[in-house]
Length: 150
Length: 357
Image 1: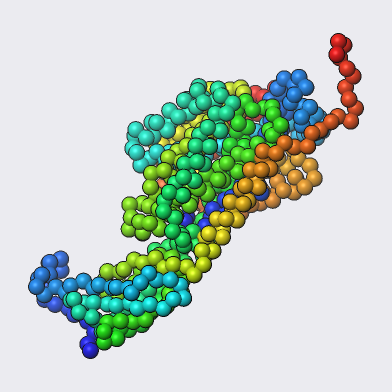
Image 2 (image 1 turned 90 degrees about the horizontal axis):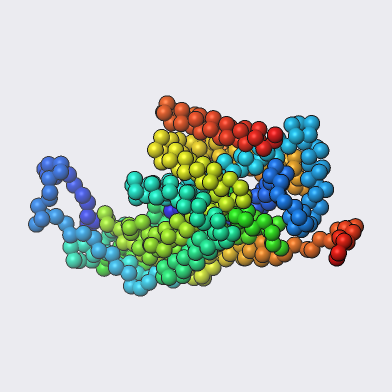
């Protein structure tokens, strides 16, 4: 199996490629919704056929702080590679030029973001309670003398 | 304005904003507010003084302590500087929000000040209505944006904290603007000593709701979506800005029109002549100004409060140092920044002189 290799051609820069010779875009399929810790299959098709020997990579949090890229593996003769997601959230699967955006489900709803949101919410509720609670009533040590007529 | 920090560090900047707001912003606002009567005596009549624990005694002590150094100049300066910084900060946020809408948006933002000065600030609950609207809209937006755990945008990371931590510290100290605003004429009532915490909590809930709405919308549409902010979140932010305007204008029963005019001028200043100086203002002048307010409060509070004020000043100075503030290369931007300093100093000095007489 020979992996697809982009080679230089006589095509002038900026010139549109011949539609007959232009390769069809890669297509990446998943056998189900990805979830952290649950193995699944990633299938890569090229020109409508399973693409073997293609390196598939995943980018967690693409374009965001803490972005991480990792190699999933190389597709077998049926264009498949096994993938067990390690990190939840939006990720991009890359096997060619066009990535496939997927949302990896977490094994637990309590991720760092949701825990932080809950903790901050509790902090704000406490602050709201403190702000709406009347302070202890203050009584002067020496009561003022009664006014005439009281 | 919000998606940038969220994309860089997730929930971490929001957490810093809220913790600093509760720990430093609210006490700072409470101190400044508590000592405002020192420079602007109000009719006592048994209401204002009687509900403050030991206020009269402390006020007399503060006057006595400050007499050798100018007879309350620190108190005057803290109040005047807090007013000026509040107006400039809210005006800068308004300009940031309105700039995408072009000239019409900027003119509307400038006109929000006289509208608040002549309409909203006449009502004691003028701040409550838009602030509550912001909270409700933000929470509704968060709940209706198809929340789908995990929200990728919220995952906290501290990598590259130098790029967002200084701004988060400054924003946290400013979140108590509603508390600094004293909620218009709400001078009486059982909770007025804690209005700063109440204002901080309302502003924090609005900020948290808008954050969740933005994260949920981003998760739904993905990085290639049209901004991922939906419609409700910008409305909530606009309501929050309007609450800030009403709070700044209505922070005292007197001189509302003067403060409305000041906010109008600040908005026009940031919108056109000094548009290029806004980043420098956020990074340099505002942290230093907040540190000055904290230092002015050191002499006004006692005990642990003084230490806390010193810590707040150190935090603001740290934000200035790590924020990478520098004299702008562009001559016009540097001149605009210098003119802003001159304006603030002149405004604070004039108020101190007038009210100290």
